[in-house]
Length: 485
Image 1 (cartoon, one colour):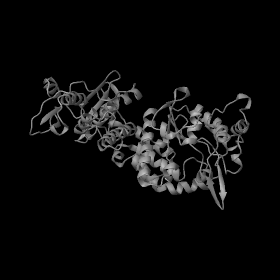
Image 2 (tube, rainbow, N blue to C red):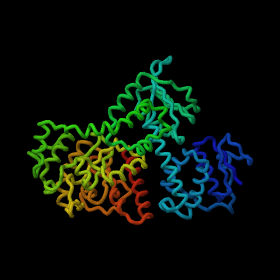
Image 3 (spheres, rainbow, N blue to C red):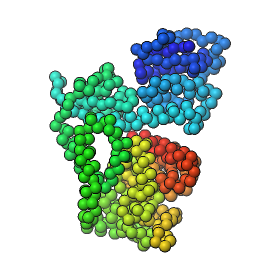
């Protein structure tokens, strides 16, 4: 039994050094025990440098240099941050298999690969939660103003996520205290110290009133989904969030506020916006003038006459989301419920979409969601309106509005949901099975990702095939969010 004693819980370099030496000496996974310095072990153990210094027996050596593929290394750097005690053994087991199975990392159904990618996904979500839920509190020390936050990440992501906070708060002295390690930025250098206790963090400051005001102002009762909210903002983080104290009251008031919103008359766009919209809704842009705001796009879509779909639709449905979103989702067209509500992705496909976004760790409120075609194309069967797929001419006619949304928002990544959206985004027919799961260049330094439409997932009849397609869909959403971030 070869016992490896690593220097710390996140010692990737030490693991790699020892794993390379053990692999070259053909020490099988069941004969390697991975521990961290400070953990008790009945078998003693050696450091990675001691193991690497031992010459390999010629009879045991592999006879050639083995190089792990980049896909494995990328995943491994995340997996070592996971809190599972199995992580180092799992990594070595996969590394052991890679020499004989060089394509192993592409076999999603393999149990070891699935567990490896699952660990990596959980670490990525923990890093995302840290970026979203760290709340600084102002203090004053001998050097003046500084900011301190307490955070308890689900996995050991503090060191890996620290550069994000340096980029975002480069002109602010701060410390982030966690049970694993503390992050410190002094305006010049990033430093790390041992983990701390919650009592070491300040209790509160005046800025918390601003957090509560901001959160209350952006809370939309009409879009409240408690389960999805708690999945995106787990209760384990609430005690560190000043705005969390408002959540029970906001939930209790949501139905009443929604009813009030429904009873109110819709607000009318300004006369200038309507005038510009009518002007731009003709067959070609008016004297080359383009829309410059999302309000103009929304009003223009409702007045659009570039194709005949407006005749049978209730209204045009423009996109929804922040004006500077990094991630833009493009669906096919509004469905029956979207046509009535005037909002994209609020029907059954929208609920599937919201569920997948939450599982992928993508906050919908930070994305812009729209459709390739802005009016509902359908045929009547009795009293039911049955969806019909838009044709290429209708997609082309409506692409002017999609291009306007892209020009105004300037997203880093555009996700095409389904073949119709792929045609609108890429300008050519797109076989989803061949291009999904990869990034493709777009104009303006943006990238495109093509994946399934949520409505397709609802139609898959076989339960196993549906689960597999849904897992791929979530994987594509995670890819798009990583590219955008």
